[in-house]
Image (cartoon, rainbow, N blue to C red):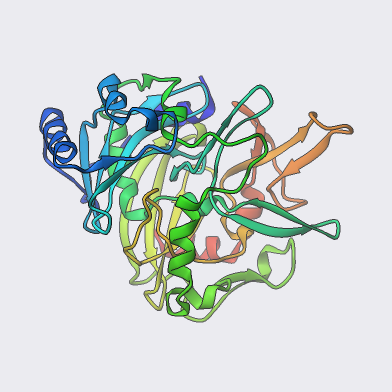
Length: 370
């Protein structure tokens, strides 16, 4: 059992009120409504191999069974599926702003317990990787490097509860090794950058300075590197633990040792929202999101909230030696000096709770939110 699939299988969900509305339709009613859209001239636009014959793709077992309404847009979903690397839904995004097209996408759950939308895929003899969104630059040993800004693929917080509920409709995901390459654009080895259908809407939305949260600058940062106590928030952007808690959910994962409580919390100025995760052993923060309602055809918001990435280290994060290079190279996303034990089920991830629990905002969260 792969890690990503295991997390999905282990996840359970309390009943709750959903900001995203799961329509009360039978699978047959969803299929009929979707078929009427196709018959009316709405075009299905897969980016992957299914683009050669979209209708055949549907008839080959991919008719959606569920429908969600979010911000005036419709998202249709198959049952939960899995391949050797991912647990996922095939999602069909029908934007109100683009009524003539429906875009098949892959929605999957990350180890931090957030649902994401994959941007592309690399499946070859030399590489096996799912695209993780826009690129960011960073400095390493005096050189400018690029990496994926994975939070740019995070689906809206408002959609997360509905996806969790629907992921429990089946006891076991459908085994499906084909869907990812049918739906997603197949990229050459080593390509990190997403394609224009993902980056274009983001660039257009951010071209207007008034759309940018805090002018596109970090709303949370560290005054001193590798010092969790030096965390600072720009005035107004700190989470409001007093009156800003707008949603509480309870779920669980064997990977994190039991019950997980999730708190969606507004900032003091009500311009952004946070998602705090609290498990038996540690808490962590999902990268915050705007409150805007525009989403791209991939599902995520087109406007980002920038914070120092060390604010949002999950309970377990990558920390391993890459022996594909000579000499082997340490790959770690945990601040130096705060690496705990490797996870017993995944030796590429280590316990990051020493860093997380030293963050003043996590300590305040524990004091204020029950």
